[in-house]
Image 1: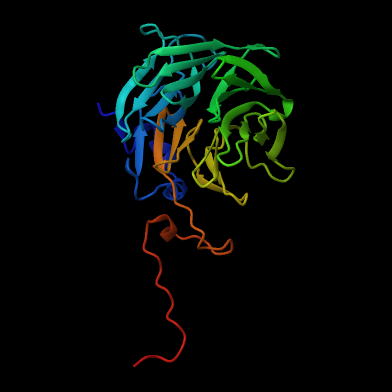
Image 2: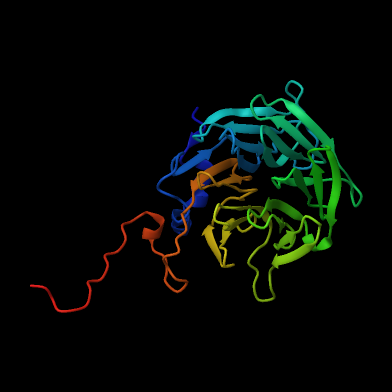
Length: 339
């Protein structure tokens, strides 16, 4: 059975709404090394979807059961650089010497895939799938940590979010030790994490209150965006990442939307009517967005538009800006008609 297709039955009812297709059409690029759209099926409650910048492969975590249960049946799927399935259960809990309960967020550092798995940060070899690291964290607030995401700062540190304890931990790769970066109730259930590609600050999105916070390497929390009295833009944010131009993307699990925030802090919905979009990420080299759908047991890879500075804020974009139709003809210059 072919596990990769452009359309899957479990998504047909969700995408049957005409507005969904209209919005998604702004989500797809014409030129991409892996095609305009790739859908992966047969996953089991997929949580996170990331790319390997070195080997060019892709990985998807599947919780496969209860998200907080140590049942040792989670698995990680591996795709090749063209988005084709290499191994549905490349890393599988309970097989050989692998322990993997409910894998959630991931981060890649050289040839090691780091995975947040309940209260443990695990590491696996990206070529063989063999386990190379397992560090369990004890939470001072809740007793047992509950990790939801992990990100790498490019400077030797991993950061892990503990949604239940409102905590972000720092893991020193050199010394293989954990420390608490910050515990702050204002984080409101930090779910997804990302490193801002320009400032180096940690960006955390909130599951409980739909807010976006910035955390410095020293642990200082600054609120960037939150719902106001007259505005309830976000509900339960799950994932966050940046493209190569510094635009930020966040996924709202409950509303089924993916938002983009441009460098000038304007928000735009680039996709909606999605079935539970999870911990998304951006393949910056190929300009692709990677989105898992937990309740649909599937994941999608789509091209992103290339931003342009040719249009002002007042001038509306057209489909020509996204590559779908030729640009409209320019008006003829004023002056006497040539004979």
